[in-house]
Image 1 (cartoon, rainbow, N blue to C red):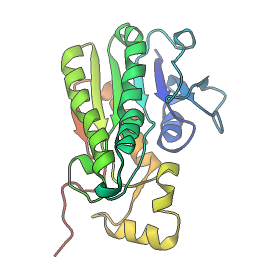
Image 2: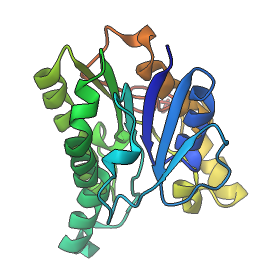
Image 3: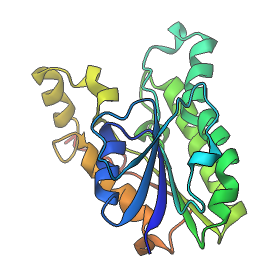
Image 4: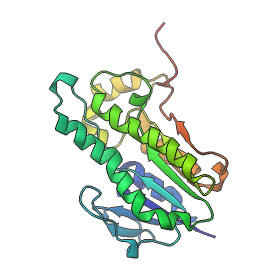
Length: 232
């Protein structure tokens, strides 16, 4: 039986790559601002996580898988960050996710066992300059995911993916010329930065029954950056 999978965001980047993986064996719903390039088999729901309340009437019942993809990369020296920037990053990365999750919770609980996938960052695991705002908001996701997983086990599984720099439209300003791309690859133990499909494959695994004994975990899909040193 096909699963109903809801992606918040998914018309480009990791979400789009994930939808392409899932669409053959699942019924995929994408709630996003745009529907560019989406396959006709994918159900699109117009939705802006920053301003809209998601319409339950347009969602499947039950929801067997849920992925929240919107995020921000706001890097600057701490002394130059206004409190509004911290609030904005927390809203985009965490609070909007909580708002959607509270709305769809009955649909998730109607599933035999639903699986949730959230996204953090390598910056929550290792200290990185200029990452104070994004690390704080992503750290909230990791703490919340573990608490939520404990509260709703065994009915709902919750896992988090923490990537390092990945080639997506959100990260374009860090990879928008050959010099930046070369330097980004050189900093990584595997000598390359991530691709959308690298992250999407892990998310697809966590949504599947192949991972049905995994919950409350943070997976560092980061080319080894969080654990390996290449300094000799």
